[in-house]
Image (cartoon, rainbow over the protein chains, first blue to last red):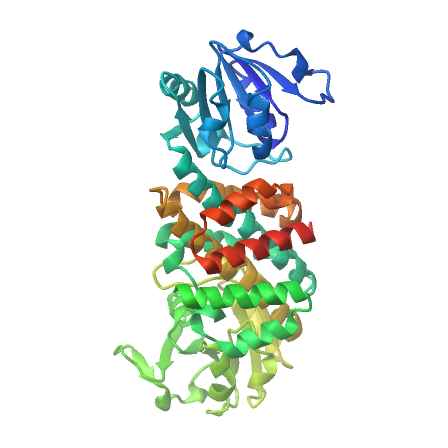
Length: 240
Length: 240
């Protein structure tokens, strides 16, 4: 059993606490604790913990890391976009990046997705052993490669969700809901995983069906979505 | 057992033939048959068939329908974007729109997604009974609503696949493949279905994390993808 501090109780901090508290002694810290079970960041004594997880927004990582000192603890952040060097004021530091989208409303199984880790001297091995105690797929990745992975994840997850969001709105015009297209979306992903997205494209853009495309632009009343539709269609046609 | 003609052997015609030939007598027609099992469209005698499925590109439906005559057969097209009226030269006509993405490389189960049908007088009932013989979820939908559904499907399927395609390219810069983000993409969809996409957004755009966004724009070397990234980010921030 390790002693763990989690700083920040957003989506990542919440889910990390859920999985770690099963086997470890976890204390959660926050700048403005709103629950009795969460301690104020001012009360953090870094030396009491084996691992300190910084689960704060990406642009707050460096400042938070520089706001406290550690000696023997391993201090890690969970950000896809921030380099490991944000934590270099700490002797033992590293990165624990879970490649997943977290919302407090939905439970998540840490054995079902890859964790990308990085550590400075002596830290990497300890972090890997610890991560493997509750995650199945733990891989080493440099800060530079993790930045590319994070950018790819924004397209694959956030931007595809925005396409679903627009679909959800348009479906209302047909008296339908997003769950009505769930089998289509599920198959889109299965096909993308099996064939690779570059070989799986279908629809009017890749067929160069200008009549259908013109009809769609005519149906779209939101000017922003019209611009998006045009741009993505041109991009599909260019990159096939 | 019904007698079925399928005209057009693209992705939809191929899969419709796969499922229908199990229980029905199916003949496939094509303008330029490349296989012995496919007949030339010139040899079509419409009166031999109970159902004639037009599985040609959307912009070819009307012209094809007007190129032959029928009396007792039910003539249907499978297009999401074309109105039923494209077939009004035929006494019995309708639409059979499977809401799915088809590729010849991947088998598909017709009981796993909804079929949207429409029919003129007397046709709708017969089409519904026939569709229910091999599909589980058959629903009536007007041409106007189907056009909205088709537009929504382009965002939900084709445009999200393009986001995956861009992700696939960026992942190469990190020595990774699209299948490495498969659990993330799978969870994105499960969350979108459970919470609705409008409640499921995460990432730098919705967090208004301008530093990470600037970092991503800096990493993107393709000018088109930079423009897309900016536009989708602004759109996410505006529509939350």
